Image 1 (cartoon, rainbow, N blue to C red):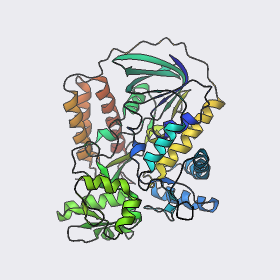
Image 2 (image 1 turned 60 degrees about the vertical axis):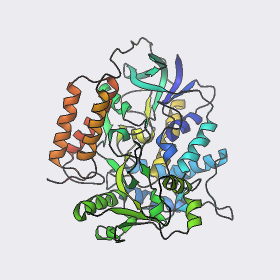
Image 3 (image 1 turned 90 degrees about the vertical axis):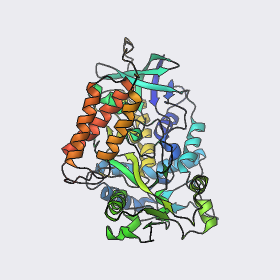
Length: 480
């Protein structure tokens, strides 16, 4: 099998790249499970856009401020300048964002934004609506239930992928490969990610000597219901706090103002650390209170949160929900240029959460993720069209490393606990050292290839955290 472009992942970045590629190209989209088991599907908040041309400098500044001085300013400027264009493109293709009674687009505000500039669809189901829309717009074939287990690289050119599909391993040759496989959620015990998101492609990149960037920058969402039995925990959107929900303790005290004058509207890393610290310091349970919302408005604005929590026995908006921070978003990833290309490997691109464009710096500004995925995946597709490549030789051997062996499941669970306890919201040198030693011990033992890739990615996160000895953004390290 030979293609012009192989896209790994069927979330917003993968699908938007696909619809930017003409039908006459031979394009294949690969996803690990089914098309909708991706982080885009579960995204609640919305898509950020500069409200107008005059808002671009403010959007850029908000992004730079959230990124704590570590953003690539050129990438941020490009993203903001491109935002209105991708929104117009979606609308012209037929996508419908939520509007008011007079037909005007509804903009909302989230933490660390200086104004309302976030568009949503279906209330709190923006990702689901956008994902369904892009799936229907896509004209290219898709291979589901297929796991990419290696990249095929020859003379510093990516020539395709090796996949495990239908019970066997096979090579798929391609002149270009776009990695849009998402982040690393399954490395953590508590996370909000789709079950397929486990950092496999990051591990492959490590094997190939491809640079990862800012891997210590892992973002934790402050308001998550974690007391369920699912691997993916129930996210309670940032938009709730943006529109009036409060974080309180069991006595109704809004303690966040002890940590930051912005309270609930402080950046996510500050709110997450405040909740974490307050629970440790006071021993009190922390809740999200939506009691100031009118019931009918809440049901209409946040229908999926309303239904999900109602199914779990909570009567929103009148009943408080116990919350905890949980892993949410990988800020760092596979280092890319502004056109989405991976330095040093021709024909290889990365976009979306898998990539590190430099936009987010040390902390992602709320709802910039869908925008980043749209802007840079489109740029990657355009770059592929502008720079056609010659096919590789196609002489690649199938790997013989077992994908899974007995005992891997227990080690995966151990890894998730190690990452949550030692490499999450509050880090210490001793905890990071212990995590690194434990991960290295597992890597030196017998493990299947899929677990090995997870371990390599986790090791990279820990090593990056060890190198950064001062706290910045989502990386918070203390002695003890």
